[in-house]
Image (cartoon, rainbow, N blue to C red; front, side, top):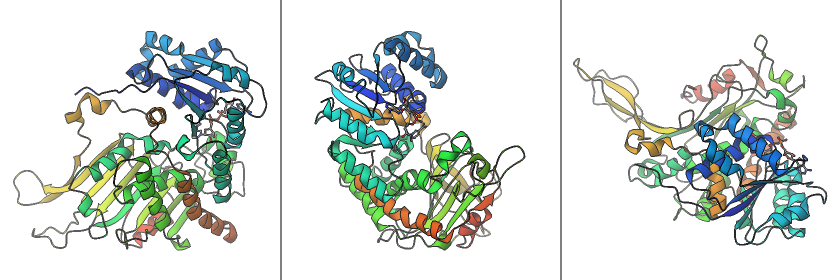
Length: 484
Ligand code: NAD
């Protein structure tokens, strides 16, 4: 089966911060892949706009290097790279001053989609929005893409939303959370809402609990001082983990359309119970031989910022009453792995004599590594020897059935950028969702600050502090192994 690529309308995409780390690692190599696939057509153009003085040739050289360094197998497509580079231009711009804006205005074409990627610090969002309007570069059809962090609490998120709302309608604002662009996350919705099998079981009658894990093996390394002002709660839970929680827990939207989906996600966030301090564990990784501790990395010997957090939350609605959602995320963990696991209840009664093992169906949605979905089912152990039961995973990614199409896993960033050009906001966070998420996380963080809560140490390469294991053991449950 060959994958179908539907070309998007011609566009002018301006990447503010086009020389930055994110642009070089993700955005530009991703756009090249979309060009190679035919989704970005030759009529489209990309304009890098950043502070460095550079001409078009210099920018093209930088992008060629970025494709070489961060691209996949497609970096061998030399002729296509040359064609792609031809679509690029560069304007040196000062977000806070007047330099470069007239030149940028002169570069924009009529009759194509105009999109502006704000891949810069959020403190510049207001300046960019103001100047895009003052110079009539953005119009009512234009779209802007904004990166996380979207605020550091409710107050700053509200201020940021208000600033953007001064220049753009909500339908023009695309708040990116690359977790939502992952193939498997969308597949989760396909599995839930495209099959008759799962939805009837998707509630407190059949689900025992849900686990969401996002584990990283890296520490905070070079960005320790920056990270120390944020921590795992702000950096990961408020956005990525809560978005995953929303998708797994939301009611079926009536249509797969942006506001229908986002309305349902918002209801989940609003139904979250405040978290009791006994149901949350924070951690900091300890030193390990030559590998520095979190506090060393953060260059803050008295830091109370968490590099790990685990918690038990509840959603106050009919569907999920009594079903715990366990969330955990951390740095310097034993493997780089992200997954959502829906753990179904035990069988009420086993008819198989001598079968003391607890057999459970588990639907595991893996975001990394090896994006995919599998369903743990119980079957008979093959061979003679009687009726012994074993649990096996039923691979639901169907890589064999889908063949090449399954291999064509588009990176989250490139998929989301194509959605921006298509004007599809389904996989982007709405302003009220972001604010509701902060409304839930703010009291947790304020509680820690008030109590001077000290994170627990954990070993590098472990699954986090022992208290995090206890969080589940106390409930008679256990975390799934973190497997890379
Ligand atoms: P970076 O520091 O590598 O790049 C910043 C870019 O902004 C540069 O191109 C610089 O020239 C430009 N810039 C800075 N001040 C400017 C000004 N006054 N006028 C015009 N341009 C200016 O940053 P980054 O890592 O690429 O991150 C960009 C944004 O994306 C940040 O908001 C960051 O939080 C977010 N983000 C980054 C990553 C990542 O992996 N790097 C991941 C998620 C979110």
